[in-house]
Image (cartoon, rainbow, N blue to C red):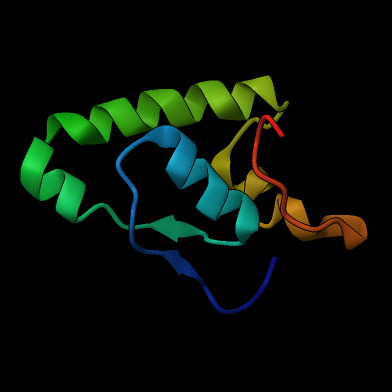
Amino acid sequence: GGKVPLVGVGGVSNGKQAYAKIRAGASLVQLYTSFAFKGPAVVHAVKAELAELLRADGFTCVEDAVGADHRHGRTAKPRGK
């Protein structure tokens, strides 16, 4: 991994959006607006969906997925495309 932590910020209200930021290189993801509007329950929902996505792609932890879309010369592609 890199030495500078990247924080994925903006537009995160579900696990799929958080996962995209993680695969792009974020080691932290901020929930702000969705937390303000949906409350603490959004944290559990994001974590649950993120865990499913990680498992489906064969990752055992978030750290393993950080930057996955940029390894071995790959470029980021939206999931499902």
